[in-house]
Image 1 (cartoon, one colour):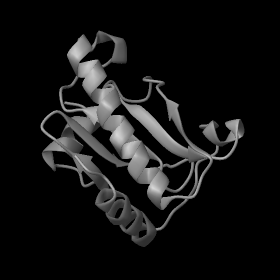
Image 2 (cartoon, one colour):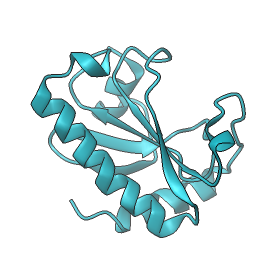
Image 3 (cartoon, helix red, strand yellow):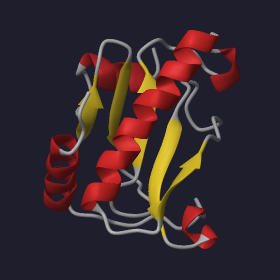
Image 4 (cartoon, helix red, strand yellow):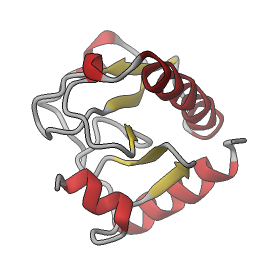
Amino acid sequence: MTIFSKIISGEIPSYKIAEDENYYAFLDIRPLNAGHTLVIPKVEIDYIFDLDDDMLSGLILFAKKVAKGIERVVPCERIGVAVIGLEVPHCHIHLSPINSVHDLDFRNTKSISKEEMQSLATKISQEIDL
């Protein structure tokens, strides 16, 4: 069982942004920027391109709703999207507010207080219409 499956089941706490029957979104605890969110399928599949077509398209559509919610809360030029897939063997999409291409440098994470993370999670969650 991956750390993400433990987050979905509630064994490990998270700053949940959105959830439906197939997908879960939560703030990254090592964010590139405030609002950096991970979007995952609830099924534990390692590689994004091993998802079946329906699951992959559903993941992208769910991520789009989450991205729109982030944009309404965090001022930015765009929401950057990255799929790296090496850190945790559970498919995930990074959504991060960006103002330049350099804002997606995974060597530069930010430290954000628990209070700010909870506030962001609440505000973003309220902006997502599932």
